[in-house]
Length: 272
Length: 80
Image (cartoon, rainbow over all chains, first blue to last red; front, side, top):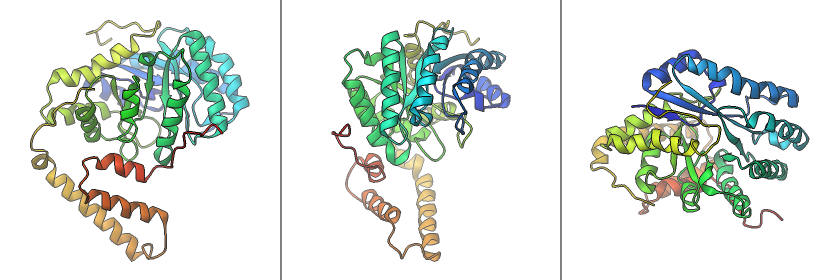
């Protein structure tokens, strides 16, 4: 079955992973800008990273017939340094118009601090002024519930936000209902120990339906599995769900969400 | 929101997995006790015990309830 992995950090993955993804049916990936596991020394490091995401990684995935799309932003962890974040926000417009760049992301909260909120508000403002799509990172573990609620509060207060063009990612059982009820797309991330698993993602699909749900691996430099979306496909199939439902979640939904970006070009049915 | 029917016989499909995870959990708690970690007050152990109560309870929303046990509180006036 052809599928998208709408959130994966290709820059942290090997060509073996790309080959495995292609063999499993992956036709497209979304790569949000994020924290690479260490704090960068300055805004110019971000510029190089954004060039990697928009110039080099699309070439690497194309070698395996996988289309690459990217999101540009300041990740929640480095957003704590407001001065650095502002310097990076200033260079984001250079990259937001590039082919395959879907919008502002992944941005959000990490420890739910005032500095993180300050940076996030400025990133939302950038997205609103430019009419960009938004991809939100919600915090890890004990911070997730409060952080998700805070992000929803910020968005609810801004009348310019088109909720159909916003994905709130890393949803779990205690956060997904509000995200969907308020009209946003809900991302479910499949991780070995934190976030969700393929079986729990299938449970959430059964509880809340397939509408506006995106399933992703968010595979990066830490414990994670680039084959998580195929694992979800298998979990759904083992339960007896029809291919049409599974395909809707792993192919048609991300296609519909990504397709709202002016920089998204993709011919359905063509893997390369 | 559209609810989908959960396919039948999840117990048949998942029983051995559930059994294995319960034994793993039991062994992990034994390990903590053997190391003397179960005796002293620890908020993490409190959360584990609260979660075990949820698992044995009558709710059909166990996953979300356990998630909330491990979540910091949210306040509507967080901006102040």
